[in-house]
Image (cartoon, rainbow, N blue to C red):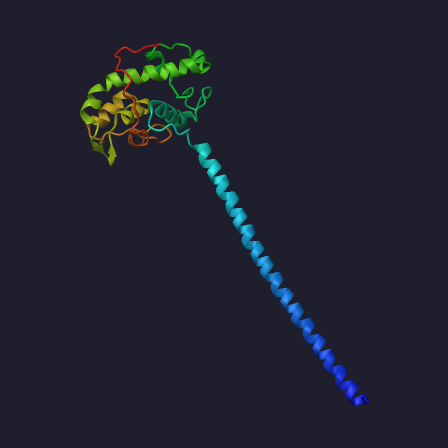
Length: 216
């Protein structure tokens, strides 16, 4: 092979080697880009999954234990709405305990020591039942006449009436029913009779007896 042929051969080999290098490099870059893209997709998926799990945890934390439409379900759902189920809390307006009782209501049902009430979970549970009995007596005719009717788009139920009475007092609920929902009420946090009627509808409170002078 003469010098001219050797030169041509070397040039051909060099071009071939350069082509192979460029091809390999381009392929590697493509693979790397795909890998990074896939990694970003996976990272995004993992982040979304964690977010969903955290959201679920938050939702579980913000919801009361599900006890169905039983009476226990009713009282625990109402307690959760009032205080997150905390027996020992007092809110900014002075309402106390798991069910957020005010002083005047406690006096009405025979409890005269706020401190004793706040530090006695069993007493709080008894107070809740006693107040339901009293409210059921006051609202007995409203329960008889209006359960099953629809006011402001919400079906009236016995448990809804009693929950609303816990919020607003039986007198305000009586006016709400008599005016077919025209006379409303909202507490300092913006909770309304209509909202409580809807949120606590359909629970079984049939075993609660209407007691005119219910006291602890």
